[in-house]
Image 1 (tube, rainbow over the protein chains, first blue to last red):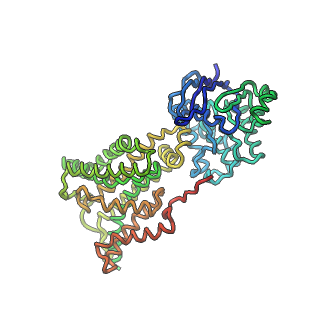
Image 2: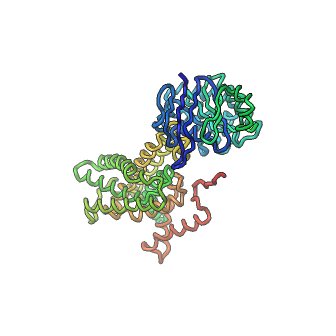
Image 3: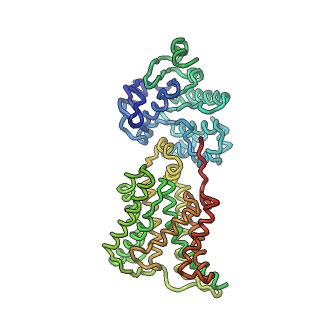
Length: 236
Length: 293
């Protein structure tokens, strides 16, 4: 059984339907990516998974139905979501954002240990512990958002365009860190990205989303090697 | 100089009440963006509840503590039943609903307890502390101490507790709060209960001075709203400082500027506030909101 099994997921905003019944699955321990252009429905997919918009169909997480549950209930199954535009509280400092990330946990010792791990993973954050998140650079904010999500000790980490608005060098370091998190902590990830090359380089599985439908899916290598898909959907 | 200090002390006493109600307004504004025009009437209602408990034979301190707890629950109920349905509606709708709440509470209080002024029992002992030629009434010391205790407790709650962390997070960023597992609606509900309780403290401690009737909080509400705007609508510390400032200025103006007297003194702090807000629209300690594109 896959960790996450999405079947015929339909979602949208008000009267506008964005996802027309997509299906995908993520195996425990892997990195999966959803690729697609602007407006394909990538963000909507993640928002549907964490119950932030009206959704129908089926989302099985560890075999349990998530559709119809509220966001906080879904999050309590340890699904961490880093939304587009960082997802930190700009007015709070780094430490407080990490506290907030561990909001659903009660194991004080574990939280302290994880905070230490985050500072090893992101030394820049350790230097800026008492600085407000809003005063950090774009790259540092993205790192903080990822650290905040990891503080939950997630079973599944959802990342919405981690490369958005960052300089190429920083993007590379963010993706290197994501790979490191996956190999060191074994964190399962579902990443949605426009930057197909980079995303495919860290992924095991890939799906291509095109205006609300999954038009291709398979191993990342397959997708990367498929000329038709590359030309038609990924523009690379 | 005696007159000056005497006026300042009277100003601190009434300013503490403004500050308590302003704190309530600020807490709700920060977490929901709502300016609760009924905050004063809710406080008035709490004062009547305390009066009722006392009339039933409870000691005054027990009566007021029970009234504050009751208000906490009532505040949560008001949020769930009256305000939650219109939370995302237009500003005008929300203003009308809080005005309706204002009138409703006022009428219900009048219906239950009547419109005659009732004497509220003294909470602090009569008399005053004499320092030189200045008399500092125990009531003034008491009310100011209550304000400091409430502000201190609020600060500790926000800084050192998990629910405080969640309340601040919800005030700043609801989406991120949801994504870390905060039950946003429940936190807003508790925030309302807390705000109502703070207002209740203001109403109850104002009652021995202002006497008890359904309109007792009218002026207080205007000053509390002014304090909240002056101090910065999202700054609890600003609300406290502004509340005390307004109380003091109001009294000094009434005491020193001949033609102002006790009728016009209400206008003076409002003029100063208007002048300040023209140059600093976010208030003294408020955050300037800079939208990111």
